[in-house]
Image 1 (cartoon, rainbow, N blue to C red):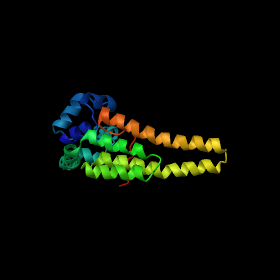
Image 2: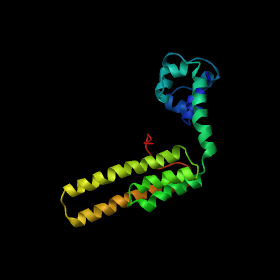
Image 3: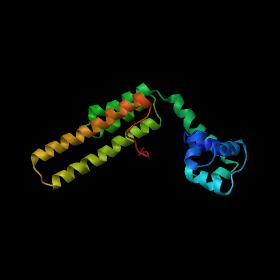
Image 4: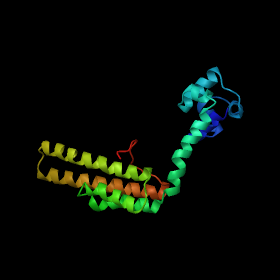
Length: 189
């Protein structure tokens, strides 16, 4: 049953690691990956440890579903991704942190000009959209607290610096691991 192998590999687990997490012997995992169908306790335990439905481990057609989903998402994106351009697009937001609409528009325009339309760009812009929505809300809450002008000034500086930090941290993560450190589980665009 190659489904177990695909699911295990998607979760970046070795057979030994899966064995440790599940309490099922490496030999049993090897047999299942070779084609033996898991049953009863073994099926339930593996499904629970891998956080999948039991039917996913038992379904013979899942291999093609998983492979086709991976091919659809991975191949086109990896082909078009230029991480140096993505880093430039991310850093372009820093120039406009005090002009919130531009911290969204400039990266979008740059993405079009540099022909970088992929998930990372969507995540970069989504983070900026969320920050642009939350920053005025936090600012207004700070004003309603009526803690004085000094507090308001400190709050404005903190809001701006938070976005600068997010942008710089994401740029460092793009350099180091080819992904974003601060990203959303969903896209706003």
